[in-house]
Length: 288
Ligand code: NAP
Image 1 (cartoon, rainbow, N blue to C red):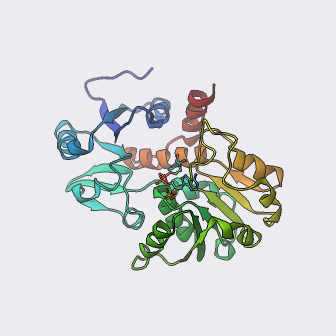
Image 2: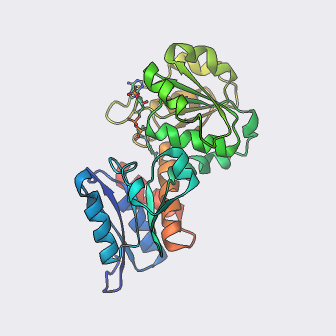
């Protein structure tokens, strides 16, 4: 059990609601494992109190924090600086103290790409398909572009939102072509794609039998293709079970969740952190 002393440094997460957040579980497991004098706390912050909360954090010496819904975009104008990655995604999930004020980045991108990098593919030749065009899809686009994917296809259900999504990258520094498609087009696209990423909530607990991809479609994917689901509960999802049954490589959302948290903790502590300890803590909390 971590002993909180008069010198213990504060980290945490702001959100509204924040009660559902899994970050305190995995961050405090890593903090305890490392034996550093920090504690990670959930801070419920209403949108109208964001400025007051940030001023309060500066006053009481909070070292850094995560931001979740609804603060990921709203916090940007309140920070003194954000990274290029956060600018591209258009959202900040990790904030730390600097001499000139708060700085922000988006560690969802590194969280997303870390398990892919371990697979060591020729990313330039891979034509990924992203299912969904919401907030998480933006981090996925930036991650895939950073890996070197040059053609990214995005599938969505709302044409206006899809067009806005595509346009939002037009004047960005992103060096990748983005095409947008309706769900009807998916079956014609999969034979060319070595990576499909689900960023929709379809299949999330408690609707665990649902999948965004018809089970017959998996036969059409190239044999060495990768299926990646951002959902972390259940683990694996029906989407991943079906993909695995057809021999595809699978990656689940727990990995992304852990690696985005590990990247944030590394920024705050300025030292390597134990991702495996964080993963085990999450699995035990969620599934045992
Ligand atoms: P979001 O901004 O609400 O976006 C969800 C997207 O899915 C939207 O494009 C939405 O379409 C689409 N969608 C929702 N229901 C659909 C349905 N029944 N059929 C077709 N499309 C549907 O949510 P988000 O923040 O991107 O999060 C998406 C998922 O990623 C969630 O399951 C979340 O838990 C997960 N996630 C995981 C991690 C991680 O670390 N593993 C991180 C972030 C997010 P419309 O725009 O047309 O509504």
